[in-house]
Image (tube, rainbow, N blue to C red; front, top):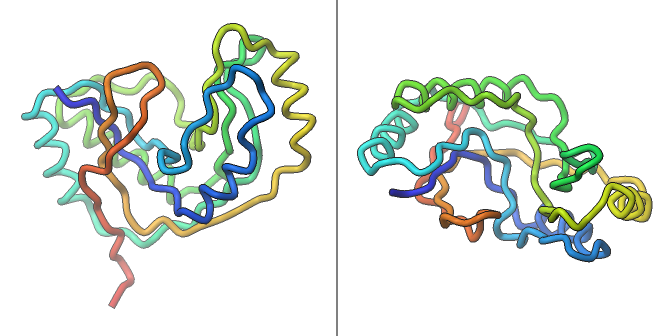
Length: 183
C-alpha cells in the first residue's frame, strides 16, 4: 500500500533560500531541500485501487491558472511542546480553493475527511520531545527577520513517502499542470 499525499513542489532556488534557515537547533531533524513541499491533502496508506482513483480524478480536475505563492514568516507548530518549524504561506484564496478541490477528491475516493484546519506551510524541521520551547524560541530569535520569498506554482503533484516517521525522501509520482490561461 503506497503512502501518498498531494502537494506543491518547491522550486530549487526557493528551497536553497529556505535551506539557509537550517541548523542552529541541536536535535532538530532538518528536511532536505529536495523534499520541501506544501502539502495539500495527506492521503495516507491507501490501496492501489484508491491511488489509481485519486490519480484519475486529479487528471480530470478543473483547469486552473498558475498560483502565486508567498512564504512570509517563520513559525512553529506545537506551542509549549514544539514539534515543527515551518515557513508560513501567506493567505491565498486560489491555494485554499485548490486544497478544497483535493479534499473533495480524497473524500470521493472514499477517504475520511481531514479533521485538521488547512494551514499551508513548508515544514523545515521536525522537533523531537527533547527540544523545548525555550530552545526553539532562542533559535527563532537568532534567525532574524524572515526574508519573504515567492514563486509561481504551475502544477500540483501526487507524492509518495516511505512509511516512517518524518516522511522523506518523497517521490513525485505524477504531476497535474495548471494550464488555464496558457496558449
